[in-house]
Amino acid sequence: MFSLEGKVAIVTGASRGIGRALALGYAEAGADVAVAARNQADLDAVAAEIRSRGRRSLAVPTDVTDRSQIKTLIDRTVEELGPLDILVNNAGGTRFMTPIVSLRPDGWDKALRLNLDSVFHATQLGAQKMLESDGGSIIQIASVAGIEGAQGLSFYSAAKGAVRLMTQAVAKELAESGVRVNTIAPGWIATDLNAVMWQDESTRRTMEQMIPMGRLGRPEEIVGPAIFLASDASSFVTGTTLVVDGGQIA
Image 1 (cartoon, rainbow, N blue to C red):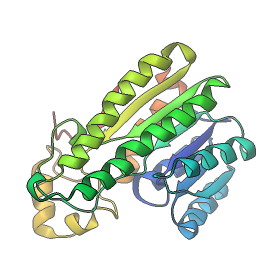
Image 2: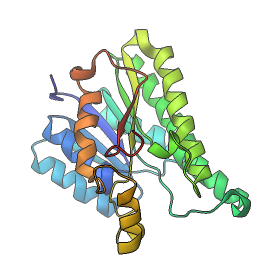
Image 3: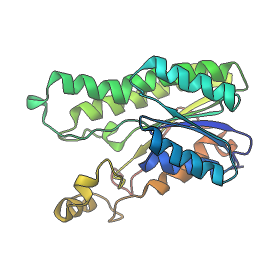
């Protein structure tokens, strides 16, 4: 039921952190995986790990803020690996926090291009390909900040909240076609992107106090939920948000 044998997947933001964990987890579940991010060397390393697990892989350097590059990623995947079954829009994030009164307009624009616009373009292009075959599963990696507004991250909350609602709408539009669309909303996951926060002992303690389980999550802890949503185990699940946060917003 949870097998991805014979499936073809794309994972964006796959060179490190959650994306890398998902790409490797999908390979272990039986999928061939195209990996996308901006750094060729990092992608090649992940692709080599996927091949070492006996699966095919394709490394495609991609700036997800550029629609033409997303199209190239999807077209190459279909041409070289086969029809697209799974698309994970994981690329995104932010490296700064600031209150709304000091947020620069270009900072707002940049955050929404990366965290919202890119998801629209990939979802639209991916769905078009899936409609040509036997359906598929599109999974957005959002955030609990898109469920509860995060102080100092208004721009990020706005983008991730919009991703959730867009996903619900698209899931309804595509429900009868066999294309399912769902969201995973992680809480605090220890990755390279937020290492400046969790490597500071005082900041880490503050973060952990927000989480009933008393610790940060690991990238590998997003893999199980992502396999569930990509596989036949979730064949009657669409338009939902699966929260993985150690109880933070319970």
